[in-house]
Each structure stands twice: as C-alpha cells, then as structure tokens.
Image (cartoon, rainbow, N blue to C red; front, side, top):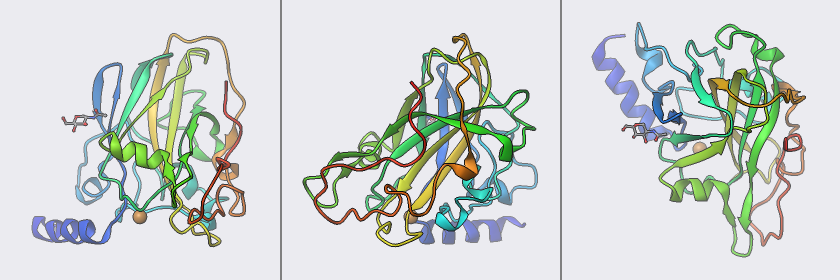
Length: 245
Ligand SMILES: *[C@@H]1O[C@H](CO)[C@@H](O)[C@H](O)[C@H]1NC(C)=O
Ligand SMILES: [Cu+2]
C-alpha cells in the first residue's frame, strides 16, 4: 500500500478506535516491541515480534459470539509470533498498553500455555491455558466501580505479571487480556482484548499445570461476562478457570 493511503488509514483508525493493545513488554529487563497492529499489517515486510499478529487493525475486541471460536485465543485471526522473549521463572513481566479508554472498566487476566515445542509453529487451537493472575473489582461502592483496568490506566496503561517460579522451564504462550464490561449487561456485550506473546521460561520448577483450550475459557452467559456494572457492587466473579497456585 502506498505511504499516503497508509497515513490516511492510520489517521482514521485512531479516530475510530476507542480501545487498545499491548505495544511492548519487558522481560528479564529487555524491552520487546509487540505486534504493532495499527502499523505492521500495512507493511510489506513487518518486523518479527514476540507478539502474535492479528488483523484487529481497529484495535478492537472479540465478544461472546467468538468464545467457542479460534479468534478468542490470540485475538482476531491470531498468527504465531516468530520470536520468543526469554524470562526467568519467578520474575515479573511488564506490559505496556496503548492508551486505554476510561470507560472500559473490567478485569485483567493472564494465562500461560505450554507449547510442547516451538511456539512459533504451535497450533493455537491445541494450546491449554492455565490462569496465572487475575484482578477484577477493586471497589464497588461508587458506580461503576474501581476495576483492575482503572488501576492499569493509573499506572500509565501498564501492567505487571509474575511468572510462577514453580512451572517447568520451556516455551509458553502468554495470553494477557482485559475484558471491558461497559456494555456487558447485555448478552455478548463484554469485550475481550486478548494479547498473546511467546515466552521462553528458564529456571522454574517441575509443575506442568493442566489447562483449558482457549475456545473453552468462557461462555457468553458466565456470571462475570454477562454482568451489569452500573449498580453498587460488593463482588465480581472473575471469569475463566480457577487460578493456578
Ligand atoms: C519499552 O520502551 C518504550 C520506548 O521507550 C516505552 O515507551 C515502553 O513503555 C517500554 N515498555 C515497557 C513495558 O516498559
Ligand atoms: Cu473499546
């Protein structure tokens, strides 16, 4: 695509899109550029990345109509990242989101799935994800509540996740996700923004946690998916399988 039309596409994308994606991660102190979804799809030879490619060029979301379909795994038409970021088990990965809209309250959840080989070629539909962290409602006393996503915004659109020290060394796909709940009072109104990265975990223990296929993490009627945030809340059931511990 010629440069001028790319600029027009980019300009209109930033006007339309109210959402976001992870533009970089830091692992073992090294900063890795993610898959720049509003730029790389328009390049003839985009840089290789530790972030999975997607066609979500609107910086948009998946919803309940896709929960049992491949798009929920690593976002829209997700394609394996070519690179992997080495990370020591027990250490923390930082994720940098693009500016996240204030209206998009909701939980932040991160999963890992062992690749049993090379994450750059693994079949995403066979990945079994176990949840390594989850944060949902922080304070429900003031409508529409204070949420993990609000904390992420306050931290500069950043999030930190600890890689468990107990998991076996090896190659993993990290699936990090914000679920925006501003419309989730209606069926298929929750918005999932899954972001996948390839990690090469070193050190660690011997645990090989059981997991769930990406296509069976959620149902559109789950208590934490079909959920109205515009009322005083005392709790919020974070969706997805139980936390690994
Ligand atoms: C990676 O570097 C860029 C450019 O300096 C910075 O904006 C971003 O916040 C860094 N990423 C993380 C996760 O710290
Ligand atoms: Cu949005």
